[in-house]
Length: 268
Image 1 (tube, helix red, strand yellow):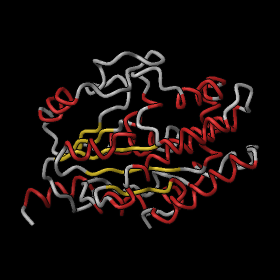
Image 2 (cartoon, helix red, strand yellow; image 1 turned 90 degrees about the vertical axis):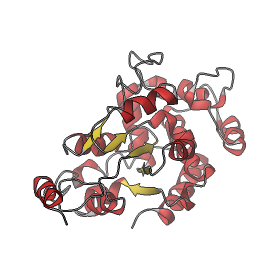
Image 3 (cartoon, helix red, strand yellow; image 1 turned 180 degrees about the vertical axis):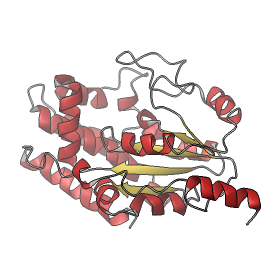
Image 4 (tube, helix red, strand yellow; image 1 turned 180 degrees about the horizontal axis):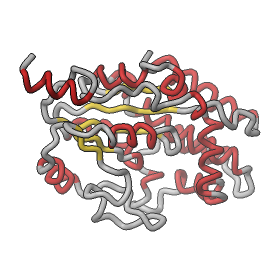
């Protein structure tokens, strides 16, 4: 190991990391623990540059949603910003582009991705607490409605997912069921893109991130991303909430089955 790399390893607290310029993406359904991961990486310092999810140089040309820009700029513009970034490891969290994860990985050679998933009830409760009634039936309808070409929620939704949502949707459905079905639709995109077979992607379980001290370290090490120790940054109290949220039997079954599929492909 060179003197420079040993010094860098000492500064980071972990003597590892391939400094080949590349991009690491964070994908997921919203409210799945991605902010905790991004915050950790934003505080990691050189040689990492982590871009904020909203109102960043990667999104600033797109129409605001809820007062914030969240969609990625045209890809050539994203490429220019990333190419001008001096840090060799660039972290990008385009959650609203998770339906295009494979395309983004293909576009950026040498890139990798983390897809996070979290218990459906925790996600649904977090959505309702943060966004209120719009996270219920109106929010779910945006996944079904194909009339707006700028709506990221309806982009690349698999036919079987849209058909199931149409069957279960009702304007007066419970907000809990609607939020849970949004979780289901977004996480189905992981399998729709064949990401369970893509060696560039790790599927991370938020519960394990919070309860296994070395889980995040091992996941970052898998892709040789330099980082300080994550031990203590993700804590058990971050997970295990809202497990009693009421869901209808059909929604419960769909989400339980999908969670089991995700568990089978998760990073161990």
